[in-house]
Length: 142
Image 1: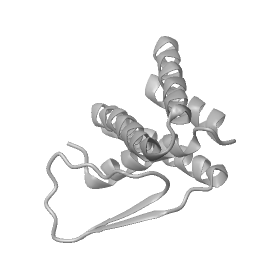
Image 2: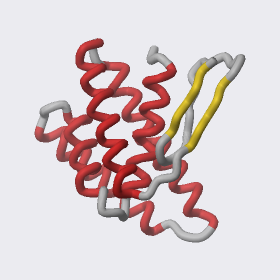
Image 3: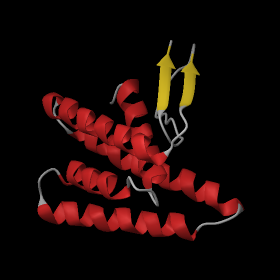
């Protein structure tokens, strides 16, 4: 099971992907996420690029009241994919992947115009939990 900090990182990563779609940050974030999830396998990386492209199309097609629901759903999909990646890696590789993901989140923030989200959790019990949102997330677990 992943620690809360890595769960929050995966949530921020999912949000960064959604936030970057349609911005100048997209190409860099798209390529970085595909490399991260592909883990050096060309075919897997290509599959991730295709998934990311579908995400962008879905996000761009959403409008009105549906847009926020679609953004939240897409962020959750990518959060889940990132959580599975981090959970499946041995510790040294997990730390490297986490550092790569943090860099991609910063890249998305730098050009995507994201607004930070602050979540404070006090006296909470976490079991199969998820922190959802988009943009930069700073989570405090007390």
